[in-house]
Image (cartoon, rainbow, N blue to C red; front, side, top):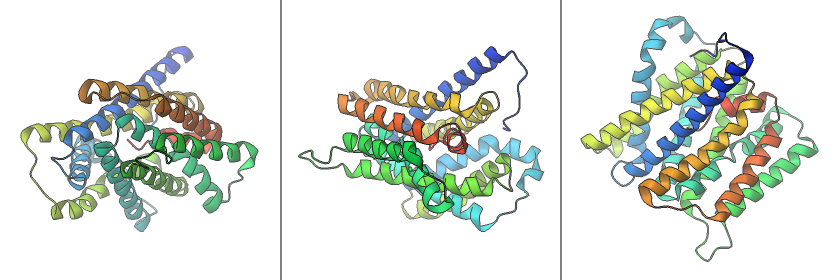
Length: 301
């Protein structure tokens, strides 16, 4: 899973990296659609447990073949990061289970905006005029999607998506600090290992045994999550994050297609406009530095 270098001509490397990122976007969209299919039958806490469990099973041979990767300079921070990651996933599961899928996905794109603010507040990063504009534009785009002036008010489910995006940004800031002493494989392995027992604790309180169909969806979700991580890691080994980051937007049309086919949902013009504003703002905020690399490396899904 290391972002190793693949030997092939430059143009071929870029095309393969782009294909991997596009594949990751489709897997993310499928993940969201699975959550909607499970909604009402499986509690988000239980989804979180099974997603982590089957994802860990999928990559366990990789971890077992390289036991040295588990040596880490951190202990509590791994637990805290896994716990926050789990909370962010549960927020996203609640959002995707209740809100229109395209709207929730558009709000998820605000993650890098929170990341920019967090880097300024906690790490002392300079914002600069471009990033200040990006933050204002990003949250303006979120308001377009949330439509607070709507007669029905803001959807609570979309607020969970916003909370999930903020929590993901905190996780990414922790990753920024921890990556100074631990390599990417170590961070990924401990995250997968720790999420399972952490997720089991709240899942037991609301446990219902999934049907065979639901279990099949949960297995697929775990595999999709692990493949997503693999695709993104490999892509980063072949192309710069600044080249790959714009491909993240493919998640929205992919989600919109799944939502239309499976649930008859049609994304409205405000969703597309708001998402485009948010996404453009995140590209300005991330630029080509470490924010862009984290943005691609640690997608919410």
